[in-house]
Length: 457
Image (tube, rainbow, N blue to C red; front, side, top):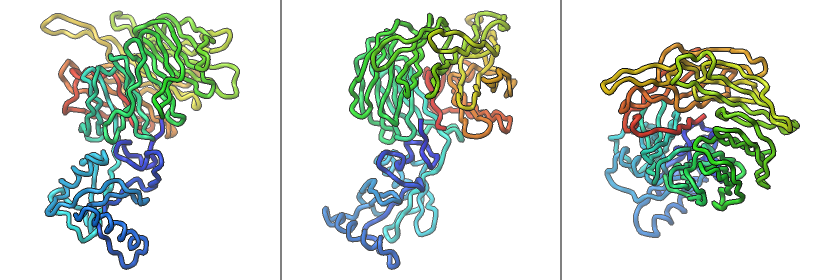
């Protein structure tokens, strides 16, 4: 997934959309007509804005990007406060009012300040660290990971079981119980495409935004390749049925690996033919096939079984060779808990580790897998490089890793305790050797059935 150059959340940055070029990552808000004695460009645009005003006889608020592209034209309202203008901008542009700063006459406007017509108003989008979550409550939620605030909610139509985000082009892909894949516009919250044809619950997605492609698979084993520009199905492959499936695609070779609770199989997307088979029931983390290599590699995780006290012999990672003679090259790491993320170029993997714990309550006792921390491993040497955290909290639902720095940072999402408590995010920094909790309170708890979380890089 690409990230916008300004570093702000995709739905807050219209310049990231295809066809837009706003290197400063913000937009200008102007009233018509404009008069700038020392700016020929502004003077030439004044007549255009004046013409716009004369079309309906009413003053207009013109919203443009710094590159000059028109974003919106809003009716001018006398005695309008800045907070009211922010709400109108949010409705047409998708930029959350909480993420807007308005500047007029070299002065930062407070929400209670009145916006006048004498000078241009500049809209500045504030950079935020963001995450998107989805689950059984049929909602896609936007979270501010600095404050824990919920910024925006897109109401879906079904239980959502898988989620992928295209941060560069401001789109979100969801699949769920109604056997359909939906493509959402992150700015407006509108559904752009509904891709139908699956015969069961959609359980995994793998997009290629740059080339407008998406792979999806359902529990009935039907895998589909879609064109995102027109929403048309390009190919279909029938694989074995399974309630627990993972998918990873190597777009350069047009190969897709499908893993279930019995085995993992590599198919050609063009023909649907099976190429390789791996005899492992472990959870697929990622499939990689270098351009100049005759063999591929795949990383799997055998998660902890929280019904067993002894964890010394379980919870390991498996590194497989993918070729005509597929074989497991290495098994390493112990105590792995559900999630991991790999960077093949750096030969590094981050994995959550944990242990089973017993809870007591009025209805009896139950066991639950809890996390202890994160580990950083080297794939080339199979050595444990670093461990972060020694606390005890619920095992993460998701793990997102930022590999940009010399040492990675990561964000995990957890259900905080018993049902009804808010979910929380934890930020892990391997460089600073720190772990920080970010609670997400309003509207989001374990009762929402959060099953998928994507954090903006």
